[in-house]
Length: 346
Image 1 (cartoon, rainbow, N blue to C red):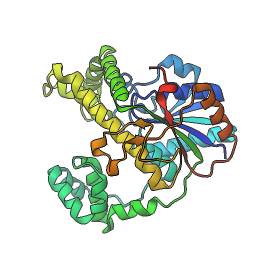
Image 2: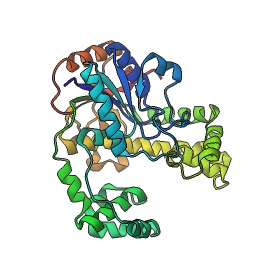
Image 3: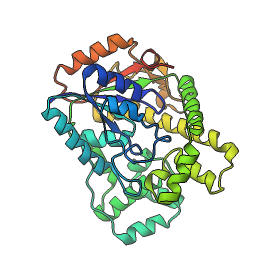
Image 4: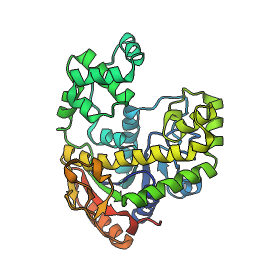
């Protein structure tokens, strides 16, 4: 099986540009792992790779489905499996550009299978205040509750649905699922920025999205597909919808999107701290308490762990080391934490 290369990291970290550079060097296609870029028309707010670049290097699962269609992690895994099978049959590599971490985990380990809840259960949960749902989850599945944000209605509701149907905590099923083997051998390169530099890049990206027409794009999508279109609830688009419907002052739009994007980036880096440990992935260098590069807010980091130790490689050395590593078998996911400022143009 041909090993796969994944480029990961927080939003605005330069993943797409580095994935393009790697794909060009290795002679591969790119697979987008992004829950918004799969939708046609969601271009500006998802930071979709320009069409000219996609014409030069083939990108899979961008503009894959219509905005009024649902597309979940299961749909992604099925589509991605087919693409990976095709490129491996042709003995070609593939670069995965990881925007949606949950989709990446689903691709690597498959999905936790639980029976679907009835319409009545779903309706009752949708009509219950989120505070009550979270309190209920803490009682029946404290392990899963501790992993979720208190206002994450979708995941809280899913955990409660699983408990109602399976009569056992979803957290238990997830814990068992973490023991399964990786479905693919992947070298995952995680871009790490200092917090201040990453936040600066995020603020600049949001400002550029607004200059590039994010409001007009959202207005057109809202008029064509209605507020129920799944991706209109995603970061950036959701805030613009609030603004267009008079629930958010236009003067506050830039800061609101920037603030929520910074919070999202922090959660993404928390994922790349915790997920490799949960999955027993091999990390290089290992996570240590004394970081070279700080990416998380020290005040909220557990046990004083403030960031990541990173590999300080220039582009040429990075590309050569990647090529050499991919020439060897990769039995399970291997994670490299990299100094982004050496690999990505500021």
